[in-house]
Amino acid sequence: MKYLTIRWLSYPVIMVAIGIGITYAIATGLSYWPWVPALALLGIACVAVLERIQPYERAWLVDHKDSRTDRIHFVVNATVLFVSIELLSVLRSLAATGSAWPVSWPVWVQIPIAMIIIDFGLFFMHWLSHRHEYLWRFHEAHHSSMRLYWLNGERRHPLHAVMMASPGLLFILLAGAPPNIIAAGLAILSVHLAFQHANLDYSVGIFRHALGVAETHRWHHKKEYEDAQVNFGEMLMIWDHLFGTYHNPVRRLGFDEIGVHDPNAPATYQGQLLRPFIRPHAARDAM
Image 1 (tube, rainbow, N blue to C red):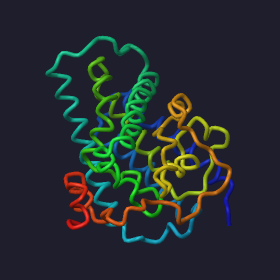
Image 2: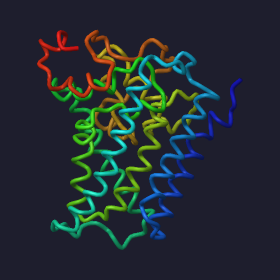
Image 3: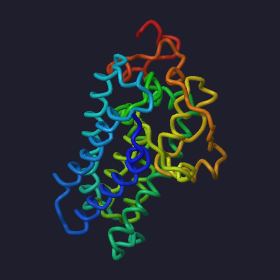
């Protein structure tokens, strides 16, 4: 049974509620811990629950021997994120930063500005990772899953996660953005990424042309590498429109069209962690 309320309201209601909650926490001076991570985890949990109620593809509800690997990725990358926030606070206190950031503007304006800048950095590094073999070897783990669901939004090599985020984060940090603004933007983005990879039958209608939601992002995970060079945007699709990589087919993506064709792509967390450091001709023997 399909619920229209879940299909049409799940993304806007959850994203707006979490966005308002996180923005309110920052604006009123509540501590980052535990409020911001707790709100982000609440939003992600809602996506996980809704998947079980109204999945996009029932075959993706079944464990493909990937759940354990994805759980490790989630914990490691969440830890990397939280540690990075603390490091940003320390770096900003020690290093000279610019005064270009509009610190006097309302928090609800600063956070979207930070997210847009971070998002462009993510898009650029994502695009670059599909064009350089060595970067792809870090990024490959993200594409290796044979299904899409809320948890594998964080299936990323930790070093690649740092590479992806670094350009945008460094730019806004040097511009003088407060760490709590950066942290809020990243927390909201983490909920969006759960939606972006969700095995949830939801829609944002015409806004799919502007937002990097599952409707468009699924095409980025096609097995055929040449077909996956589309829809790189994490939060916004404006970058794909500008760089000619936007793709919006009308047909439904099949449950078996996801993943990579490389039979040597490792399935374990350890294998995915080591994969980029193994010479291409030696990868088959090592895995």
